[in-house]
Each structure stands twice: as C-alpha cells, then as structure tokens.
Length: 213
Image (cartoon, rainbow, N blue to C red; front, top):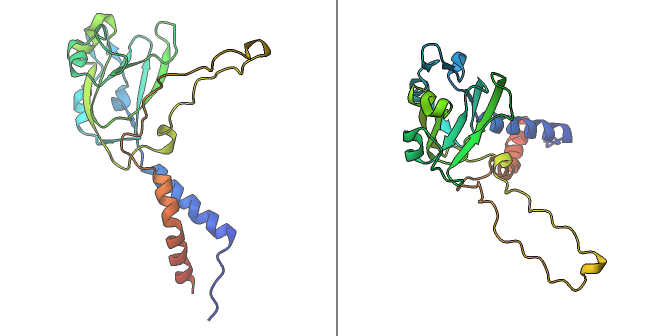
C-alpha cells in the first residue's frame, strides 16, 4: 500500500483552515446593537438600556466592543468601580482608566470606536459628556470579561522600546543611557492560540494522511 504524499498545497490549506477557525472564535460586539452609543438630549436619556444589552452577551479576552457613535458622546473604559459609580474621570488613575475619543475634534461628527477587551474581570464603560449627565441618565454599563482562549498575538505583544539615537562623535565620552520603566504586559495569563495550533499541526497532518490511505 502506498502512503499518499502530503503536498505543500494541502499543508497550506490545512494551516489556513486552522488559522481561520482560531480567528473566528473572537467576537466583535456592537454596543447597543442598532441603537448605537448615543444620548437623546431632547428626552435626557440614553438611546437604549445598555446594561440590559450587556447582560445578554458573553465577553472574552480578545473580543472587541464596537461603539457606533458621534463626538457628542465619549467612551470611557475603567477598571475602577468608584470612577464608574461617580460618572467622572476627575479622580481616575492613568493605570485604570482609558478615554477613547476616536480622534475627532468636531461636534457631532460620526465615529466608530473599537475597544479591545484585554483584562479579565469587571470592565466598566460610560460616557462622561455633559459633566457626567449622560452617564447618570443611562449611558453606562458593566461587563465581566472571561479568559476564554486568551489574548490573540495581535493584542499580546509588548510595545516596542523607545527610540534612542546612537551617540555622535561628540558624545564618545558620555555615559550610557539607561531607560527605566515601560508599559505593563497585556499577557494576563493568556496563551497564544496560534502557537497552540502550530504544536497540534503535525498530529493533524498525520490524521489527514491516514484518512487518505
């Protein structure tokens, strides 16, 4: 009996299918569904019940929250429950609160803001526009982020080190530059799904070869 040959084309096809399967396990959630992330200034209330929307979802590391909104609202992510409850970032820390503005400087300009979920446990979102009134009137929700399959490689890489220019001829006697500090890792105990797939690939190919005998 002749053992079938695993061609390069077949190998690439299997690899592509595995990568596609891994990628498809992460989910993009549109906040508020068709209502988007908006505040009804006329009625002084949020466009929908965001807490109710969030309660019907399951969130994992590597998922994204998509905010379809405009520059009349803000998108605040905090891990600080006190900051969330008081609807303001006045006393927030740089280590626990992020402000996403979409880069817009014009009032009422449409924006789509994508926020990755990179830390497990409670994640709090709100809009602090109108001195916190939007948050107080319903533009706020809490979610719990599960570990799932962990962060994908695209969200699991530390930032590049800061650039330091090479010394010139006139600095030959200068002491070396020491860079202290850096950004915390986003690894958060997650494992790389692609690395796991690669470790399983030889076994999968052997199974495929056996099936073709």
